[in-house]
Length: 462
Image (cartoon, rainbow, N blue to C red; front, side):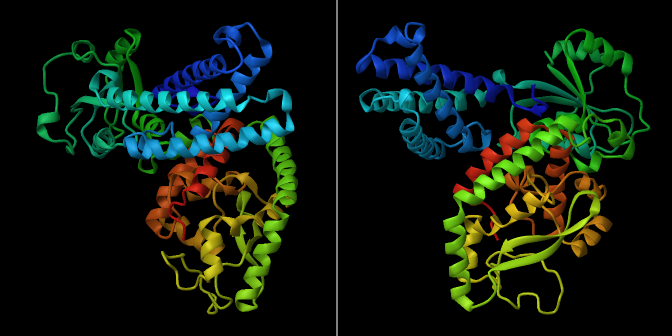
């Protein structure tokens, strides 16, 4: 399903609603054991209802931050337990701070601790049930694929991957005489019309995954399927929904011209995004001023070199600007003037530099770029002009990422490790294209929340 222009798995939405109901009941049980009645937060007491809603929303937010609505973090009970434990711990710290600022929302420990215990046990049990149910074919979408080429092979790969999941391929229907990337035992060669075949297989969705655009789709049959309630999508839309990427191999200029999105948002959204960037930048600078001063002191003390590092990058509409970061490499890291990809355990990185990279402190000075209007909090990572020129030659549509302002964090940064090769750049562009196509303030909010998870759980830092 689509929520605020963002593809959201229906299973995640249902899991979130189930969590909310369970946590609300846990709060009611905690109050009943302490100083109130079970029925108080079901319409009897407005203050305690507000406390319960705050309790639920806080825990849901931190569970989301820790990735507990992502399928890849729900396939292992130990991983789910650890992330759930951290999310509840962070939520309790946050609630304690809010209780100090807003005493009327205070939930006494005699009610809060039992509520957290009941909620933790219930949510953990709910995820165990979810993992068992989601692994059965009965709870997955039943997909019939038209085509047997490379695109169909990509769908077959997604079916077996733990991360996307959510569907089962009923089979692959050959169209025309194209080469097959699908094993013979998965091909459907029955002499039935497409509507009859779809009904017999109890199909939920048909995916058109043809390699040769000259081949003609059976449009009349597809229309009949659509009229009988079977969803029909093309390969690009299917992969975009399943992976949060735009598949580059299926892109062509006319698709970009006529596709929804790729507008950078409405004027109202752009103004709101700029206002958000300015307000949050000022607040963030004020809050992190002690950390900025300490980091600057440690960087200078290690090798007596400059604290900040300025580097030319490519921004919106291809205009260049100088990004500002804390220096994390030796002063002579690029003394020959040649731009290089950062490597795993890069010997050019200083000891302090390794630490501030791991916890993303080196990115803080980019707040100045945000205030100047050269960057935004959320957007594609800005690259150096020499690398942009190289990547433009090897990766089609690479310049599309310059439709929006670059960001300190972004959809690609939270979904893919630090890019250090042509392959990585191509993979990250798939995520950047998804962000640009489906841009909304809600998506920015999702990225910012998930950035907290990336900072707490460093992944692919170099």
